[in-house]
Image: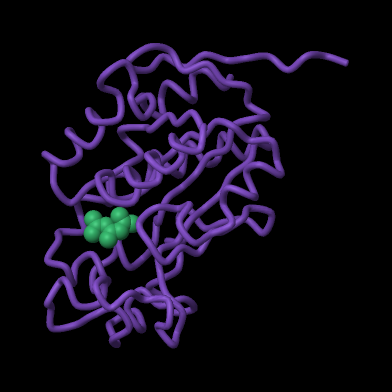
Length: 225
Ligand code: TIU
C-alpha cells in the first residue's frame, strides 16, 4: 500500500508539516448572527463588514479541501431554545437592550434552529460534514468535537472562521492543550477589531508557535496541488 505523503505549508514560525488524511479543516462559527446585519455581532455594537472579507477565501479553500475529499468540520455558537445551557453570566454581561434568546431580525438571537444561528449560505455544510453546536467560545467545551476527531484519527487542524481573538483563539488554545497541531489562516479568520486581528494571530505564533502556526489560504492551496 502506498504510504501517505506529508505536505508542508509555508507558515510562521516555521513550515507546517501535515498528513492530509490526519488533518481536518475546522471552520468556526461562520454564522449569519456574526456576519450579517441584525445578528448577535452587530447587537454587541460591532461592524459586521469587518468579518465579511473572510467569506471568499474560506469559500475557495473549502472547495479545494472538499475536492481532495479531506475532512471538514463546522461549528456554531448558540443555545437551546429553552436557554437552559446559557450561563446567566453570559446572558447579562453585555448589558445590551437585547440579549441572547431575544427576538431579532433573523429570529431569536444565537438560538439553535433560528435562521441567524445557521451557517452563511456561501459556506453551508455538506451532509457528510459534522456540525458542532457549542454553547461557549471554545469548540471543545461541552461538545463531542474531541471524540469525533479521535474517532477519525485526526491530530492536526487547519482553523478558520470568526472571531480571531474570541472563538478562534479559544478553540486553538483548547486544541493545543489536547495535543492537536493547529494552523490558523490569516485571511480566513476575522475580527471586528483590526488590532485584535493582528495580535490574536501574533499570540498564536509567538514563542516558537506557543499555540500553533499562522499562514494563509493561498499557501494551503499551493501545498494541496
Ligand atoms: N463577540 C465576538 O467577537 N465573538 C463571539 O461572540 N463569538 C465568536 O467569536 N464566535
